[in-house]
Each structure stands twice: as structure tokens, then as C-alpha cells.
Image 1 (cartoon, rainbow, N blue to C red):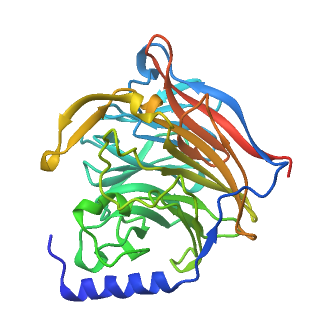
Image 2 (image 1 turned 180 degrees about the horizontal axis):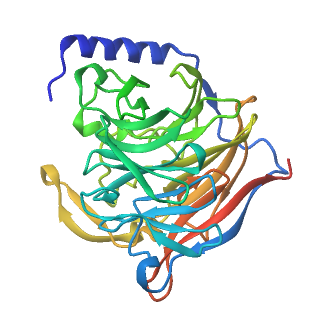
Length: 366
């Protein structure tokens, strides 16, 4: 797709405006020696067999306003579990008909306990009522949705890609219930290049007092936005273990560890921002598999065991002081998703059966 010169100019101006915003840098050393992050396991999802079985790493794990957890797997309709981990039902079916799915890329709790399910293959959003009955679908302009968050009953913010010249290179979009984009914003760079697709990925969370937070997953840049799309605050973590990525797809070699990534964030109250991150283990290369020759004749490796490559950490940032209060590694649980006051990770038991583990996180010793 070619972008018009006017669209590129707008993107450059938007990026310049973004870079001109005040940025607070957050140093790495935790300042509260008595503080710690406590994780308490609350549920394990996944049956041994049948419709409630979790087959492979989920694409999406989300929680609705009733506490139900919805899991989307590749090639299967979304699965719904209650807050204790009991399997409830399958949502819809695989296909292209009403209430059916091909490739779910985001799930959003809607107004009045409803549920919005985004499908990138069908390029539509489907609405389910509080009883999880299909209501209707509508086409969408966001081609690929990384994350979605309801702001009002009629407007959501969607992190993703829109293929139109006027929205060129913008990672965040205000979207109405008709699927049309009202506003696009949030670019850090002047223009979008396919090789930097990962730099467009954002995670979203409600901000205390209104609006929302976004996190660039590969740079540990946290931004607070008004619900109308104006940037209010920017925090950038100065962490030697989290060097900013160039946004290109990761290539694993024995000399190049996988990049650190932000996994999710949650603001339980005005001062505190909880963030989950993934980073390479000290001996990460032990999890690499067979060697092969990649682009430009480079030597690359597949991942044999991701649990041997990455580990997850959670930390709490005091947004008023711009300091890290506490940070802890989660050795028994490799996190992948943040569901508000819960974090979730995928694991396989000793029989190779998949499970999604939910844990509550909070700050102690403050």
C-alpha cells in the first residue's frame, strides 16, 4: 500500500508532536526496600479432554465484567470459564456465519456485561449479550487488532493497524460501534515500515480517573491518554535489562538473546501502576532448538522450550514519584496476559496437557 505525501506529512507532524511531549524517565533501582509484589494463585483453567481442553498456547486470554475468562485458541471457537476455573461453554463456532469465528485477535468486555470479539480473518467484530448469546456483527476498519478497551458505551480504543493513507503509521484508534475509526493517534516514529511491524504493538489498560494507559511492548514506554486521544503523561523505564528494540521481528541466535517485552499493565489506584514484563533468562540459549540458515545467510535457531528461554517479572511503579517501588521474578509462572488485578500464564503439566493459571497480584509492605 502506498501512502499519500499528505498522509506522510501528517504522520511526521504527529510524530514530532509526540516526541515534544514531556517524558519522565524511571530509574531501575527499586526505592522501597520493604515493598514486594505478592502473587496468589486463584484458579487453574483447562480440562483434560473435551470442549474445555486447552490445546496449545492461547492467542488471547481476557476477562469480562462478571469475572468469566474467555480463551481464544487458533483453529477453535473461544472457550469460556468461570472465575474458579470451571469450564462453562464454547462461544459460537468455527466458520464465517453469524456468531462464528476464524481467527480471534482481541476480546473486549463491553457495556452491561456484554462481550465484543474481534476477528482479523473475517474483518468483523461480534457482540454477545451478558448470557453469551450472539447479538450481531459489523465490519471493522482496523485490519489487525492487538488489544481493545471500551472507553464509553459507544467508543473503544483499539491498538492495531489500519490500511488507509490518512491513518498511516498510527498505532491507536478510537472506534465506534459501527466499526469505523473516529480518530487515529499515538505514533512515535515518522512512518510505518513493514519490517518494523512489532513497533506498532500496544497494550492497553484503564487509567484511574478516566482515560487509558498504553504500553509499547518493545520499548517499555508507558503513556497515559485522555479518552479523546490526547496524551497526558509519558514514562520511560531506564532498565539495562530492557534495551529498546528496533521493532523488527526477533531473530534468535546464540549471540543475540530474545528482546524483553511488556506483557501487560494495570492501575489499581492513582499512584500505582503494575507492569508485567518478560525477559531472557541468564542461560536462555539452553532453550534453543535446531540451527538453520535465515535471511542473508545468517545463522538462527528455533525455540525448543520457551520456558527455558524467557522468564517473567512484575514490578510496581509510583507514577507520581516516577520510581519503581518493587520488582519480583515469578519463577513458578511464566506470565503472558494481564487481566486487571489478575495475571495469567500458560503452562503444560507433566502429561503435556495445557493449562492457564490465574494469579492475583498486589503490593505488600508499602
